[in-house]
Length: 85
Image (cartoon, rainbow, N blue to C red; front, side):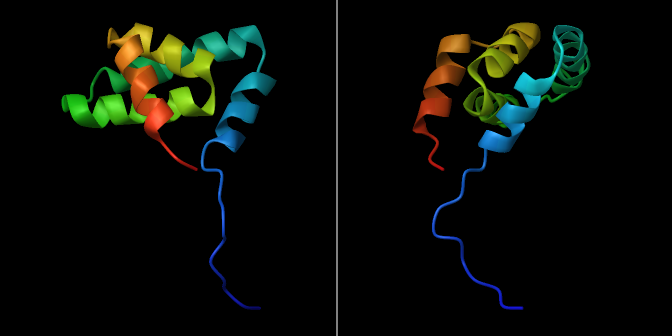
């Protein structure tokens, strides 16, 4: 076995695929539970960075979480667009 650097990784696709595979009820439950946890993150920069990761994984996922935490959806979307794989 040999370790090698992966030339290009997609750090967000798997989370998006998993979110989209859930039923609507499972998605709602996830948004509620994870959104409540994210609301406990007092550092705005950390919370907003995390939200941009969720948005990059799936726009609906990130938007719903951002709305739940009452953060700025347009700002989170811009942050997500700046992320590279």
